[in-house]
Amino acid sequence: MLKGKTAVITGGSRGIGRAVALGLAREGAQVAILYSGDPAAAEQVCEEARAMGVKAEHYRCDVSDFSAAKETVRQIEGTFGGIDILVNNAGITRDKLVPQMKEEDFDRVLDVNLKGAFNMIRHTYMGFAKKRGGRIINISSVAGIMGNPGQANYAAAKAGMLGLTKTVARELAGRNVTCNAIAPGFIDTAMTEALPPETVRQALESVPMKRMGRPENIAHMAVFLASELAEYVTGQVICVDGGMCMV
Amino acid sequence: MVLEKLSKLIAEHKDVDPAGITLETTLESLGLDSLEVVEIIMEFEEETGVAIEVNEKLKTVGDVVKLIGECE
Image 1 (cartoon, each protein chain N blue to C red):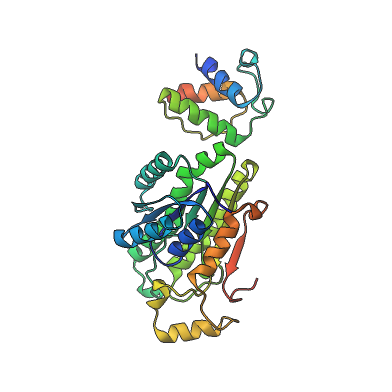
Image 2: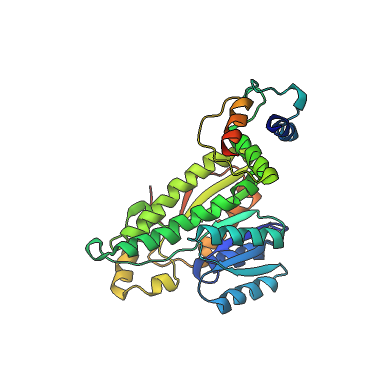
């Protein structure tokens, strides 16, 4: 379904990003994986992708750094000959109730989760515009729609991504470039593993399907949005959350 | 000089005769949308190395020439 396409996935070495990278690779896309911490994990994802017969490379990049993101995009364009799909997935949490949340907790989460997505879009935008085609997929969160106690920074960043998504969708619609957001609910990753069991239990109570999702559930939606099947879908926020957030 | 270079770039985007483009020609009459104008300005930047900041409403080719002149 995606043969010959090149996909860039930020935060692609683990969790949802890893599943998205492998999901896109399974459909034939070449993948460029951006990561910040663990080169071995990034290489592991690339090896799995290569085993599916596609080209895969990883790049260490702090997406919150405007110049670093620019240089990484330039390198990827040089190596892969262009970018067709951008998945802004890189995200961090620094959960605290507002009175305990430090200024740097707020800034860092906004910098990585929201500014990082902007930086990547900023540096790939003209490539998409010139090519008159492409897919931008932003991984937001139901927290950005519903809010979540302890996550003022994360929810604000994820809500910001929705405004970014809709604006970019409008700007690039005439160029056949779509931009959509996926809002995952409660997904079984290292990020949710770090939560106290009581929080998990309470959270699952608010999920009509009464269970956590898997990273692959998000990957399936990303594959759909990246494919020709979704050519007329843009500016949308699609919750993949077991019914947690019904608007 | 700037007009000549700009007209050439516009002609690469649109099926128009660059010789027919004057300072008074409106971007709208050339069928250029705002994103295409940005695209052409970025191409101008790449060719000349001049950094151009687009921060105003551009209506005519003359407006773009003036903007580039201010940035050179």
